[in-house]
Length: 58
Image (cartoon, rainbow, N blue to C red; front, side):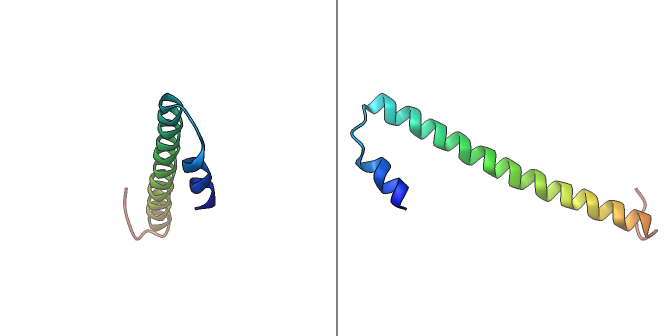
């Protein structure tokens, strides 16, 4: 939280804060997308393993 506190205490113009907030929101969206893609890749790996063990047919 220290960085958040530093950001909040900065004397920035409203448009600068808006730009930084937009960037931070975009970075959060990228992180969520990466997590979701990793989850889907893990599911795909599981399906491939089950198929190779003849426990599941794709």
